[in-house]
Each structure stands twice: as C-alpha cells, then as structure tokens.
Image 1: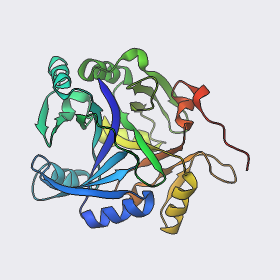
Image 2: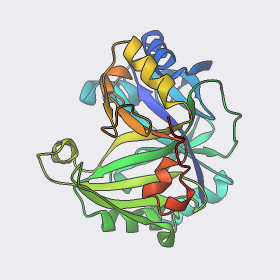
Image 3: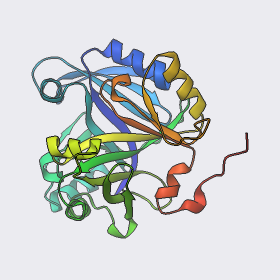
Image 4: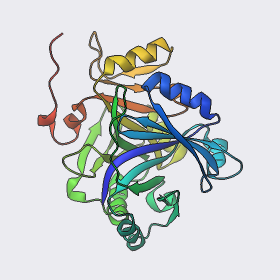
Length: 286
C-alpha cells in the first residue's frame, strides 16, 4: 500500500542555517514554510529532486524539541506515500499501528513499528527540481532485534508484501537484513539492517539506540557535482570505491546536513544490491 519514499523530516535548531546547508551541499530549493501544531514546529519544505526535505525548528516544548533534547539535530521522521490515505488508515488499524492525523497526513506511532518514525501522505508525484539529486529512495532502520521479526511486523502493520523483500548482507558495515521494496519496479523501500558488532558504527548505534531510524539514501545523476559541493564547503564524506575518481557513490557525514547521514548512489547503481543487477547502467569509459 506504500508507493514512494517522498521526504525526510529533520529536527534543526535554526531553519536558516539548515536551509543554507541543504542548499549548498545538495542544491535543495525552498518551497514554503508552515507551522505544524503536531510537531510544534515551524517547518520549511525544500525540494530535493522530485522529493522533499522538511526542516523542523521547534516553537516550544513538543515532538521536535524533545528530539533535539534527546538526540540533537537529525532525522526525526521518514516519509512515504500511499494512493488512498483512508484505506491505509484502515490497514494501520487492522495491523494494530496507532497513528495521528495532522498536517494532511498520518504520523505513525514508532513504538508500534520497532522504532520506525514514519509519516504517510497521499501520493502526489512532483516534477524534479533543479540540482544533482534525482530522489530519495530509502529509509534505513538499524536493528538490535532480529530483522526477520521486524520484517514480519512491517508486513502486518504496513501491508508490505514479504515476497518483494530482497535479502542483504554487507560485511563492510557488519550487518544483515532485508530491503522491504514497495514495488519491484522501483527502488523505494525500507531497509532493515540488523547490526551487533561494536567494531562497526552500525553495531555501536544499535547498542545505544536499539531499533532506530539511522539514515536515508538518494539517487543522483551528477555525483561529481555533489562531490564538488562537499569539497568546496569543506564537508566530510566517505567514498564508496577506491577508484582514482569516485563515480559510484558516497556517504555524506552527518556534520554536513544537520545530523543526517545520507547515502548517495549514482543513477541505477542501487539495483546492484536490490535484486535486479541487470538494471544497472554501465559507466562510460573516462
């Protein structure tokens, strides 16, 4: 019943400072501002390719301020869409997932979803904004719980179809799990990454936070532009490969984007580990 990953909500202390970061690093564009009583925050929507980043500055005590007090700046909610919000609400009720209707969308109760803070809106595809980012496509959960148990809960609660899951193992980062694909013909998904080894960042994260929202991923058709922006602004990132010129992808350090760890993969590359390596477009020779 979920169609697309469409946004992330980021708790920030200053909208203007955060807008500066997302504009400089990712060429995100301001859409508008609104106030959310549910979040008790002033929210700045920014276009990120055909998806969005919502920067949330608290107006006082409440959801956003609590996140800042407990965890600092960073990912507060991941966003997804559904074609029929009322039908999805019925799915949540049947799946025993509590939710709140606010801001013309559904805010799901993280405690009912192994810590996943998900906000679901009606599907409304936006044209791609200018810039190197095509779209967000992944919300990543790091788990201390067995990933199979979490996958079962998400199938029951969110209506995700288990036959679409793609198993994953990444020794580089010390985790195993699954990609819960929304549609077999698109990259949109929730990643479940079970990690325990303290030798790896994800294992240390799960020891500290348990099951929690860890990072997100975007696709780009101009990785060189993002690298140039990162380096011009003196921001840290980790390369995906050891080739002389990085052309496949990278991970942007949270210090660059107000506490958000963001993976970046070149156009189509994510199909390599998403069950359809035949869909990866080969790079042209330099």
